[in-house]
Amino acid sequence: MVEAVARRRTTTRRRRRRAAAVLVGRKLRELRRLVPGAAEIPADRLLLRTAGYIAQLRARVELLRALAELCAVPCPSPT
Image (cartoon, rainbow, N blue to C red; front, top):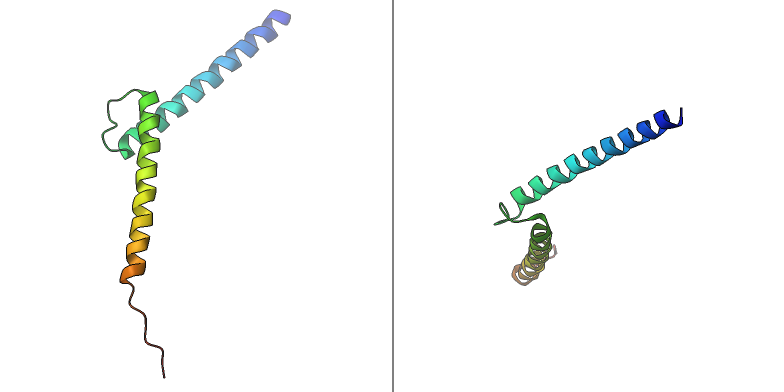
């Protein structure tokens, strides 16, 4: 009886690990698709490149916001 319970636990752990590995694999594939130049790099470098890419995108957004403020034409108030 104890051995059967231990076997079930081991099987459950293996299934969970496999499911987690599948999910991680899917997420890595998605990152490789989204991050430029990341198609063939290892996972650890992919995460670093992703972090850099996010920082770059944030900087671009801030720049575009600043440019939009500079280029904004004030609307004439109705008189």
